[in-house]
Length: 272
Image 1: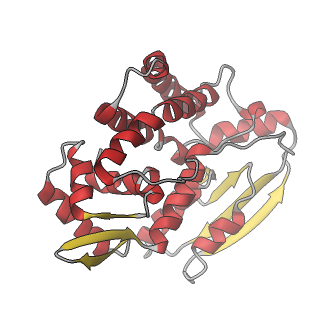
Image 2: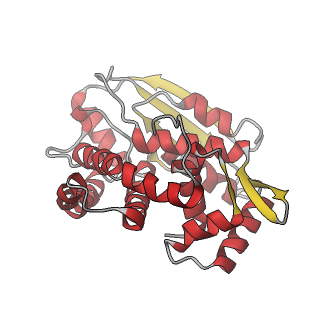
């Protein structure tokens, strides 16, 4: 796990419910649980502040760090993509984005493609991306201030179920994604019984829970959250999501108890 990601995860899963801020010594103590040394923590928070993700203030001789509004928005969107799944039947409607970006703007084009993938779009062809979810407005909002990005959107249906499945197979590597979900299940499903019995406590609970999030959050970039009728038989994704949610919930109390020992408890904390 990278130190940069750990800072975001600690704020997103723990520090947000303890005032949304942390003194440097507290952040250093938490990062030490993952064998991140203090000099590295100082370098990371300095960079995050320079990039506009962190703010700081002085409390006597100590520095206190807070996430900026932009960072909170990023965390909230990420949390939604990781924890939420579409429910209800699919209406058969595809939502398509056709983009045009000048060849001289390759970095911008890569940024657009990453955004499309994060929102559940897949490439039917290099510049034609589609999704079973209507998130076109979110794509447009992310590039509203980039005049070099031209976006055209279409909404419609295919010739039928066979065409839908063919389009899904062409736009995403569903077989590869299914294999990776199965590997995640093989790793974490056997651990559930230990979590249920409360055998993982203290620092180990915090580390295990953070590693769980780290291992699972790579999937939203690849998983378009397709309706069941478009997925391969025996799809492992739903089961993997259920195991993730259960493990995350079971480790919550012991991980929070350990964090409280470092930061101090916060009464009236909302559900996570």
